[in-house]
Amino acid sequence: MGSTITCRRRAAAVPSSNGPVYFLFEETYESNVTPHTPHWGCTHIGNAASSLKRIFAYGSSCEGGMLRTRSGTITPEGYIQSWLKELAEPFLMAGSTSLRRSTGEYDWRGIDPQKLASLRPLLSAEEAAAFEAGEYVRMDCVADAERLAAIVASGVTAWRLIDGGSVPGDWAMRHPELGHAPAPSKACPLDQPQAYRLPDGDNVLLRDEKGIWRCAGWDYSVVGGFIERAWETELAMPGTYRKRIKAYREAITAALPLPAGTIAKDLVAAAEIVVTEETSRSLGWRKRDEIEYQLPEPPKGGQLPLFAA
Image (cartoon, rainbow, N blue to C red):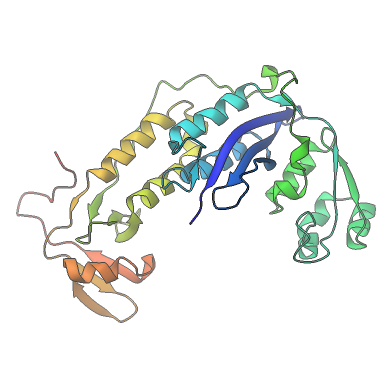
């Protein structure tokens, strides 16, 4: 299985009445496709919040190695930091683009005509009619930036709207006045997940918000899921992502073996299974919502340990 190799990242922005709209570009290639020719692509259009959400989602792929650099692995924290530097001093976006109805499954720039219903509120009557007729609908990257962001938010991928060739060049000036660079937060609450490791040694058991113990997958998947959700806290408490990700990863790594006597409740077969090294190999591959785990009662007056000392 190949990985996506990230080479460079670049943010551009335009001012709008509701704050800057950011255009995120990334230069990548696939490790299992030769020749290894990097190409730029627009990965997102949106405000600071939606841009952070996209950046953290991509950053989560670094945890398992699906997103790497030419020299090897990159930590999610390092990847996210590189993007935050770009957001702090973006280039100025310029130019125009167009959208049109797709002509078939191999038309990678066209937009699925079934999306017209969600696009119609964002288009004028004339634009909607032109789109339906298969004509080009022209949009300006500055004047229509908020509309382009709304189109992406509706489910249209950014690279269908903005060609990779629209990325600002190395000679362009940066505009920190349009940047997202909030002051670091003094508060930094750390998440302490309740976790155990299944006897198979690979899968991690997590207690969800309802107090139910479920198999959450392998370490990298569990940590990656946390990273993908961490953008909201980073938006509210800027600069805390590094400590929070590190603490969560360490907590998952330190998860103790599941206590003997744990019962797995098979909700599909309506059966109860004693969790052992042998049974956990098959339980770990079941769908998350099919199995609930019931831990043994803790010693009288005590509690079950959760983390390694």
